View 1 (cartoon, rainbow, N blue to C red):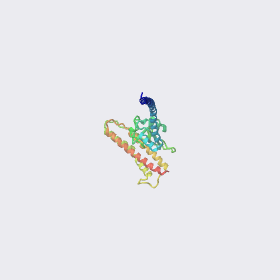
View 2 (cartoon, rainbow, N blue to C red):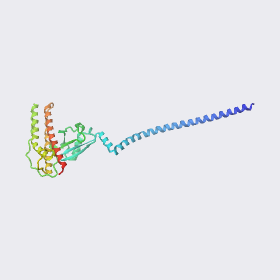
View 3 (tube, rainbow, N blue to C red):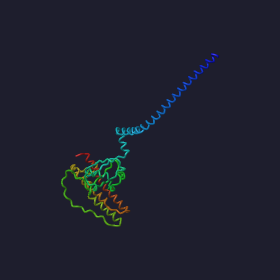
View 4 (cartoon, rainbow, N blue to C red):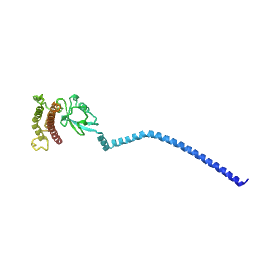
Length: 293
């Protein structure tokens, strides 16, 4: 036997065994890698299902954190949500009422809040906004066009307003006979009656309003040399406001048949006139209060 050939065969066997060992080692490593891959895949699936809600929560928490600790973002968030604050005037009282969602908050909710704050029965309350009485309590705040900073006037049954805390008893005045609405099927007759009613309500107050404005408004051209005391003007403001509010309620109580557009137009114009005088009185008194007592 050739020794070189036997050596070659031995090397060949050794090489084959070495290759076999390498191949088996490769297979083992592949098996380990595959097992690890499956394990990692399962772990990732578990982590994803666990962390996804947490991630969502963290995002919302971050938004909350930024809005809570940043006043500018908080204000933007409140504005975006539609939250508003309105002011209700009840005689000399002022109530600032926050309304978180005016688009879904009915007027009845606001009335209930004001009833609790004033102690007046809920069914006796009336709210006036821009000269019109808000009648349907099921409508939302937004439906009436009430926006941020709006001022509403609150009156009780019969136009009741709170009396000043310290007042002297006023002499009892003779009761004024309430004009009776005519029973007619002619619209012009009702139009003339509304004109007459508005004049009877407003005309007697015009001189007092003009005098009050001359006393209180810094822009008055006919300002007298002698101005009454602050307390006197305060009482006069309460009296004029009460009378003008009652006038608005009188006009609101006029029964106008459906389709009588001219009568409705006349009432609207009369309400606008009286509301204008009420605004004039309030604005003038507001200027006087800035000066102080």
